[in-house]
Image (tube, rainbow, N blue to C red; front, side, top):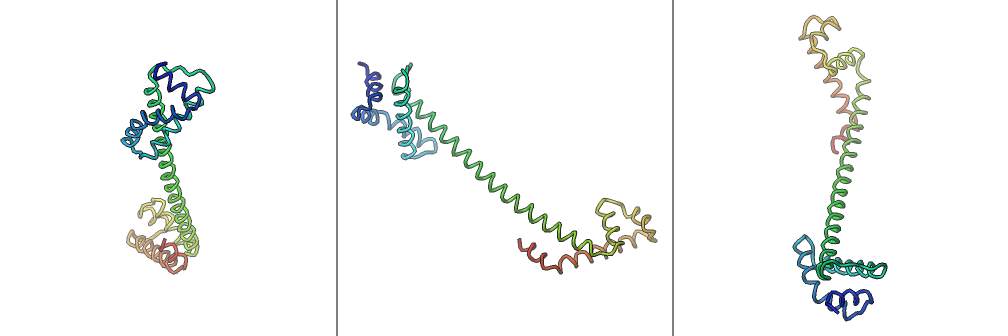
Length: 185
């Protein structure tokens, strides 16, 4: 019986002496591979044991044909298992980062919503004229158009009106207790 057949039959029957021989002969190569690829000895042991279990199940459930040597087949199985493990870790890490980013994004969205609500609440307290002036300004209307719309005598008067309305809105917002809470965030 060849060495490959010996190992395959020993694995199929679960003979402890053969399992120990497999471990003694082949584990160090797997450990070296795993350590060189971002793992440690414990990871290598887990991969090696999982590969042996996988091979055992395949041998029990169906006739397994190994076209290469037993060593090459076992090593390839271990490499594939380790690569899958690394991919799972990378995906998990990515998901954690994405979840953290999503959490931060949600916190900023909530903060922006609170700021917007405070702004709207205080905006409504302004005079009708100030609301109209600021609405036009915030919508990109030029000072020339504001002068025409409100029949102001000049752009200087329009700028003064905008300045006073902004100052009033800013004062209303800063005086609110919610502003200091939002500001601390």
